[in-house]
Image (cartoon, rainbow over all chains, first blue to last red; front, side):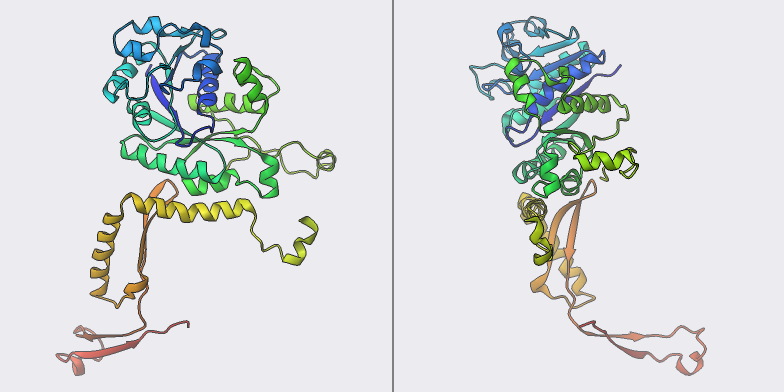
Length: 275
Length: 116
């Protein structure tokens, strides 16, 4: 079975790459896949904290690349998912500590033991980003439906294709349905029209994510979170299952619910976003 | 606000719509900046080719990169000047009136009709 190395990147910082990597990794492991998540944000590591594994770090990826330890010594097994492993970033170095060739070799090593290798890319377009994509088979871009994020995502699309990688796919994160309804925020179709790439997930804004990060428990474990279900669905799509895209409509007003009860609501058919 | 929409004629764009339009403009610029010399060369080449057949309004020619439907596309906007197109027509021998015309080249003048 062929391994898949997927880099999660964005260009702009703070849009949800690390949260996405942690949750997609967890969701894939919940599906029985062997998953390694790799934090390539050397100097500003966070994937460990989002997974709640920050106390378990002994070695990091720079130690592995420099030969201070074996790969298996640095890999940290997740608290909840036996098939999920984390390779943390170094905290006291910077992004020039490893080069692209070393990163590529590291990815090749990880491929042998895992079905999926998810790489959490740093923000930006410099060495850290280049390292993050060099070993990837596929790239997922995380963007928020907001001008600056989409602009940076577009730049990343260009850089990814210039690097000879296949066209990246999009996870649109932190969508706020009420704002979209009011016209204050771009909707999914707007972003897709501008970027012209395929969509793999829509994740709504959810304050429970902050709680989840603070507790060190990925949001996919939270049954009542729509963001959690969105990540679970995105993982399914990555595996290749057809999952209808999430409805952007938020909490229904009382009148809407009444209308639906009497058969005047919109059909509950699959809603596909035209791309 | 909501109740005054009918007065403004609902023409004022929403922030979401503004963002989308701004993005289209800024991305056209960003993509252009990625390879300005190449686009200039292509523009010069295109003008040379088109100008052999049609008179072009060189001032208003625009060549940009856009992304449309999973493809990066080159968009060239080349305004053509109003003109009379004249050419010489050598009628083929099998046309009905060709006995009279054969061997004579005909001059054809076509006035281009504009909507303006």
